[in-house]
Structure formats: C-alpha cells, structure tokens
Length: 259
Image (cartoon, rainbow, N blue to C red; front, top):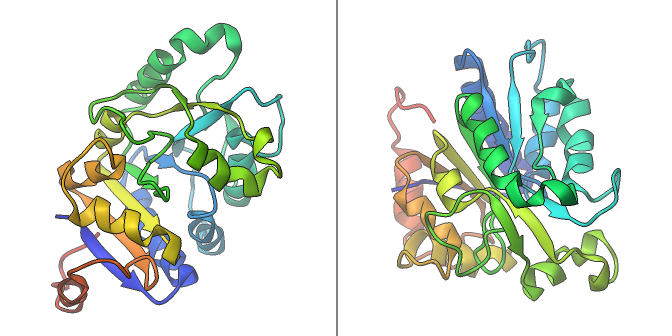
C-alpha cells in the first residue's frame, strides 16, 4: 500500500516533498523527474529552491505531466511557462532538458507517441510528482480514462475547467483540450509522490486511497504501484477511514527505511 504521511500544513508538506525529491536526485546517476503543475506542488518547488544548495543538476531531466492545447506560444498559463517560472529558473536547470509535450497543431496526431519515445530514451521517469483533482483525476486523465492509457490528447471536463479558471479568469478562457501522460505512463515511473492539500480534495483522496480500483477515479492507479508516497495536510486527510493506522506507520517507521 501507499505510504501516507499526514502533515500539519501545505508548507510542511512541501518541505517533506523536497526532501524526498532530493534524496532521489542525490542517489541517481542520471535523475529523471516527472513534474506536475497547478497550485498543489508550488510549496514543494519553493522548498526545493530553498534547499537546492550546491547540487550539480546538469544531468537532471524533467518531463511535464501535461500541457494545454490551443494557448499561444509564451502564454503565462501554458505549463511550459509555469515550469520555467517554478523550476527551471529557480533551480538553474537546463531548459533543453525540461521536456513538455508538443502542442503544435501539425504534430498533435503523433505527439503522444513522440513523448513516450522521449521518456523511454531518457531511461524512464524515476520519480513522478502528482497532484489530484477534486474529481480524482491525475494529470489530465479525467474520470473514465483507461487505467492502461498512454500519453494522448484529452478533452477536459467542465469540472476541471471550472477548477482551473482561477488561473485564467473566465472559464471560457480555459482550454478544452490537453496532452497528458496516460495512467499507464504514470504507472511506469519508479516512485510516485502524490500531494494533496485542502478540504476540497478530501473526498477524492479517500476515494483514491481507500476506495475500489476504478477508471471513474483515475487516481486509484496509485493502488497498483509498488512505491507510492502520499503527503496530505490535515484537511485533505479528513475523509480517510484509517488515519490512526497511517500515523502509527509513520511514528514507528524503522530508521533504516527511506522514502
């Protein structure tokens, strides 16, 4: 089962997440990160920037989880631009080694195939950072997505578009399509690091971690993965049935057991 860690607040969760990411990066010869966007991982990326120290990140590669289709090049809310602001510049990464799915119209029919090839050529994602949507989606894998799906173009639900309108203004400005890593692609990563903060995520978190495996809740794929760490604040953990056990697991965790 996933290792579920309940922390007091978002900032503490970000700090723990940064420790886990750096532990992976420091141990890997050629680290490959899968990077999410949105508000959930912001505290993690801020903590990473604070604790970067003198690490040599020249060999690090990163692959975005998804990207909007239809935004003009350089749009502030395109995930290429978000990642530039939140990880490329703060961490001093080589922009050429931070990969985002192509959304050029002429390339869209094969963009998923090309992205899968690029991930494979890099050796696969070693650690994938994830958030979870209020309807249980991960990446832009909306409810009903195949648990074996690969990178592809997806239509966004109205719920997702409303949730993301806070970044755009009117919901009409939120794109209707995206390119997203599939659930099968995500499952191929070596380690999944899922973060969720706030009471609005509580029901989705409970369904993903304690509910039945179902394409109706795409985040239930974490139940199929052998190495998952979940970081929740108290509010996001509020609907879980077994919080006492999860707290005991962390309290009595052996010293030799890493992340």
